[in-house]
Length: 523
Image (cartoon, rainbow, N blue to C red; front, side, top):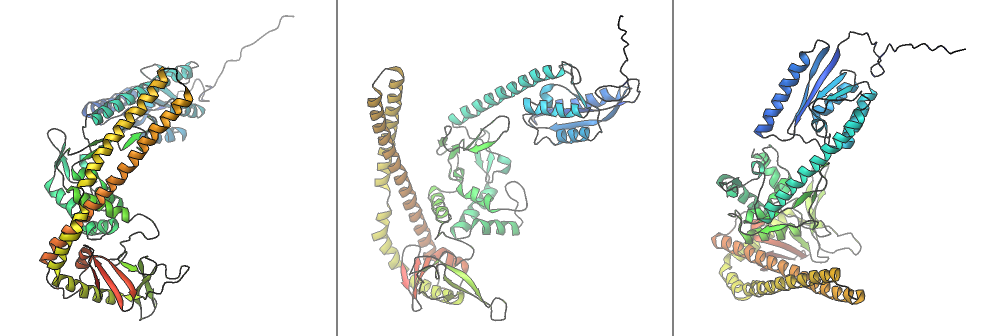
């Protein structure tokens, strides 16, 4: 007998599970995105929104849900695309049946993001239509075409990123400096796109450097500026210590510019990394007008180094922090509170390592005792200032000269360049000529050691020059202020911070104050 086969037609959509004869309108949304916020792109952005609003509302079988749009956002990942993520969340929540977008590249330039999102939507009966490519994701050929087009979009993004990177690095190599002027304190963009001093903001930069040199910490400076209602470089009401540290360590304030401090690791994630030698950097000297002179800048860097974490690091919690030294262990005194919960509460200062291992025998001091000893020593220095200045100019100033070091530095720079060229020549020869590898390795190691030796000494001499320059600047500033001082009658924090390098406690009756020129007065 012949078999009888009867076809039972489908009555439900296999994608939406709705009856095929259903007249229910599809809930439709559109997605628009532009990747930059320049004027031409913004026009495209507004045009996309207007077009899709009219297009969807013009269909009788569609119900307009809305247009989700991201302005000035990259398509290489979805993390920062707020409207895109909101649209996907609404679609998965059952509020959208169909999403329309201009093209695959508008939806996502990352192949993985694109396919993952499309499959997730498809599992929840939400279709996506890409108008330019005419791709419907419920179509059997849709995913194949989508994979191809997404890969092309990602490759286009990679090409654009590489072109932008090449252009940026070419500008760096040409010494062209670019900074975010809207949140860069102290400078505006000049007619030639270089940095031009903003006089009002420059006053604040100088004040920040001045407060730091007086002994205030970045946190204390930030708190002061916040309390005074001065907006931060980014226009925010609150300053933080990182703002201040950035200003204090940025070489642009001394007129130079270090280019390519960071670089983008991956064009898809846009992750940035501090350049630690992976790619070339470029240092432009005397690129623009300085706000801070070089000597002051180097002095600040020296002080910043002294405040790095460590057993005896300098602290600025109080005006006396890291300024009172224990003669027994050479460590710093720190504040301790006695009778914290009763009327006899008082703050005393004692060695931070007093009870570590071998106990220090140095005594504790009250803040009043510190003030009294300072006033006594300071007035002794003020009375005999001309004698101390003469001693400095005769004995100490010559030892802070840097002429010999600068000559050595120039010779070392020449040696480094020669050694580097020889290393490159050795490598090049080995790549093109068949030579004994043991002999090559011996020669290479010798040249590399020559380079390393010169580089190590170069770094050492550079640091010595910076230290001497900073020390000379600090003493010159100290003597300039000392010449104008009258005898002190009361303790003021400004006097203590600007005059004293440190106080050393030997015993109750032997406390010595060392001033910024190295003069030591026993009190």
